[in-house]
Length: 113
Length: 114
Image (cartoon, rainbow over all chains, first blue to last red; front, side, top):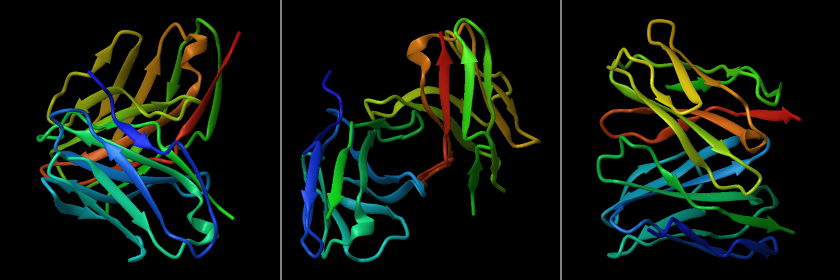
């Protein structure tokens, strides 16, 4: 059974640019969540999608957005990149009941220069 | 708001010994889930163990067990017979039922000394 796949693994962008990260969940998982991980702030919740609808949202500015497609694959987009957006972005999927926790991908390391 | 606190940023343990990682959380809910995740250098977060708040019995998964004290809002992880492969960042996490995001602690970096 394939795990959660995130692409790309590494990304270097310039300040002011925008970026799109992709996440393919485990087959049958309909919930996809995104987290930003930095050394200073730890893991911070960005948003969660379920059946193409945003179900939860964290406290991030509007520059951070996401969407989910009918096949449960999800993308997150960050516009007008800032140096502080440099982080590991983790995607996680879960079963509909979510009580068994998340299965995480290996993340996308974004560096903004 | 729910919070999760891991008071030990870093710990070390000798190989084959036992180590306990601490976690406390703050919530007014009575029904929730608690998790321990492991993040090795490969970056992928791996679910180690989960505990349902309404269950009195402490969860166990092979060498990993928890000490769940609901009244004290404490959820510690015990690793027995520590192995080199256990070296990682460990995160305690909380999830409220029925629909909420998982909140993570800041993590504890565990070193295994050969």
